[in-house]
Length: 118
Image 1 (cartoon, rainbow, N blue to C red):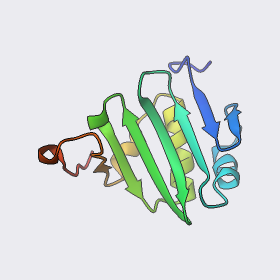
Image 2 (image 1 turned 90 degrees about the vertical axis):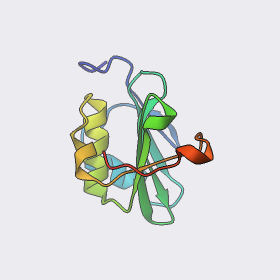
Image 3 (image 1 turned 90 degrees about the horizontal axis):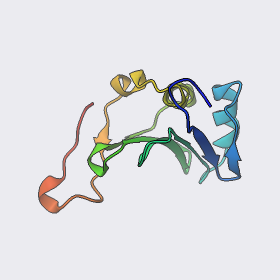
Image 4 (image 1 turned 180 degrees about the vertical axis):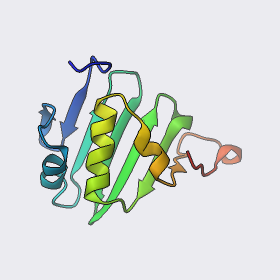
């Protein structure tokens, strides 16, 4: 489909969609109400970036293959979300450096829990 990201898929609450012409307009529309989300998968197993509207607070996550490589940042702006998902769709990861991420630890044992800045 796209250079470097052959199996790109984009899912929303309403179903699978094509790569948008404008990521900003797309995410603003898709995330306009609570409980809406956008998930961008790059075709690798357990690898995605996603955003969820949690009662007006945007939660941005990415998972880079392993449960130990699953991170979240809370309260990001719509422009940052659009940029992050656009980058992920192109196989780029520059957005990671722009945030203080918390590693999600749902799959870890109690001794493995931690926060990380990536």
